[in-house]
Length: 363
Image (cartoon, rainbow, N blue to C red; front, top):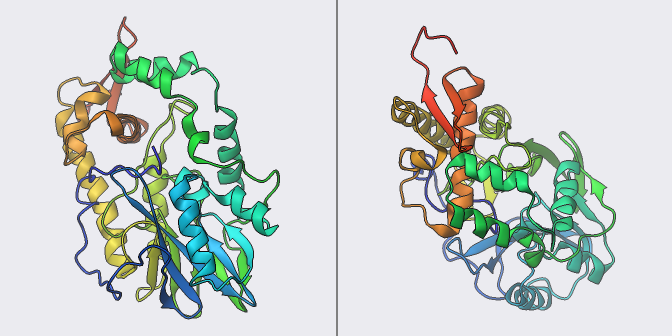
């Protein structure tokens, strides 16, 4: 997982793009930038996976720039940063690095950039602490609780062995983070270039994801919270097996519908800048609601988590995304479980079987 976005689209959430407009043409190439709003540049870094890019942004801040997200810690991203720093950023200094959340393509080069320019890293607390926690797993053996978690989901012995072998690889794509950070939280206003950017927090895709909203003109740095063409991965992981991230995600989307401007310009981490945020939020919510209905039908007979992929994803699930697909399947199952709509039974082999509870049947 480089980002936590499952490339297989989830329900209608991945394809609900009606009502959106894309005001910009070509995407920025190597070492290039596109001005998308006064004082805001859009740049793009590549990623060596099916989700092959991440958007990063620079905001003018006096004589320098504030950077939003950083890309993976890979040679290609460093080369592209060098070209952008010398080219469209004009050799001007970086004054601050802000990361929307802790997935590797967002924080991968944060430590490198902060050290290079002697500036602070700004994040929310849960994102910073979670990133530091995952970096601490680098080189450590996989915990047995993780193996049991995936066994319960229906993974076979070979797939669990792959989990053991790949555990702790977060640090391969993330440079060491600064030992300290500057905290941002819901409702804070960050002053950048003489303008205030309001912090709007979302949950579900990651613990405390920060969007930044310049209220004066409706520009929103949306991170992975509001993507135009795909639905961000919402997963349960072994560290919190009974979590309800889908409930958190849907609550966040509903709350943002009442906060963000209808005519705002959304600057996402993947895809292209777009307008039509209300339509997109509605589509994301509708997509998960539709997936939950399909899941309920599937669970008329007992199923393992790995048996419900077809109800949730439009594409086959291969080895490269099995962890994210499993996490998202359990997120939908936990959502139904916590609302008394399914039951979960663990068999003698440690495998969980999920079944729909008929109306009027005791949970």
